[in-house]
Length: 105
Image (cartoon, rainbow, N blue to C red):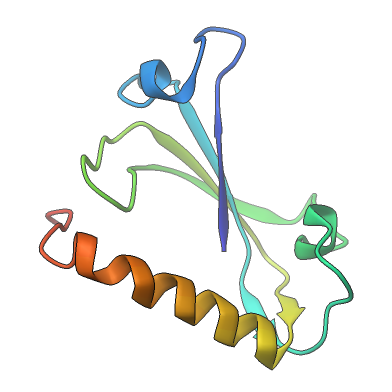
């Protein structure tokens, strides 16, 4: 899972920040399948926020601007089977819109 943030100290919104080299930052976590109570965004992050990998990268969807500072946390988090199913349904509902869009590697 990843959560995208924009540099609100320099840019008024994500649309303006998206193509700037210091415009976006992304926090990422690995997910394992187990129960997580409720849906509090903090519960989706690992307890140790000081253990992470960081690298410059790009958006994962078009227009694929290379303006993202990625932060991927070392420790995985857990989610339930029903949460996996719900996320899968959401992805499939959007898939027909973006199936021909891709970022060149």
